[in-house]
Length: 232
Image (cartoon, rainbow, N blue to C red; front, side, top):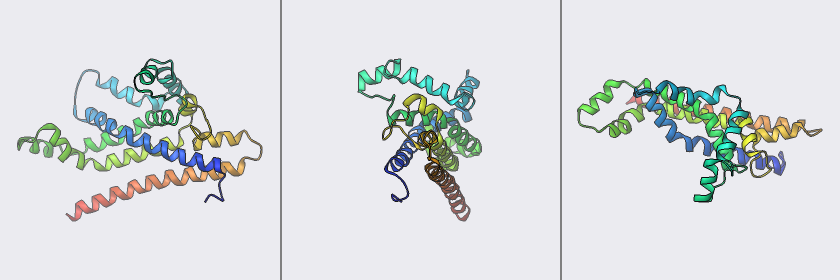
């Protein structure tokens, strides 16, 4: 494989996989919590929270990237606090790319998980509560296992979205080779270079194969779980 790709292209592929994986896995706990809140609770401001969760889907990615730069940049309120307190810098770092990708993929993750939780039979949850299970135990032993296909689908969608994210990441962390240059930004860079068509096609094919593989794997895992449940 290394003979097919240049060292810079291999670095971009590896970085994209790392960024997408961290973005999907790190946002999963919060995605589950928000999805459960929207699916199972009524509270003032629920419509506003729902709208805020889905905001990255309708705003231009560049706007989201600029907002992240303002908030998490070295001079931003959150970014300055993180740097002064923990020595963490997100702007123009691969961790910042993961944050931007997580934000852009979060709505897709939450929607998939929320739909799965809403499809869980509430009578099963009520039965567990009647038998004395605490709310957290009902969630962990009843709701979460039954909503597992949604978690897999949500994580896969977030991963695929992160793999192809461009606008927010390049605005927030730029496209620094070896540090923040992902597949999308590498493809964009090759578009500016005469004779870069071959590299563009190679990286585009890799992006397609990885994203398609992630979606197919998630579908296979969901089908396997359902088959196991049916046999049981």
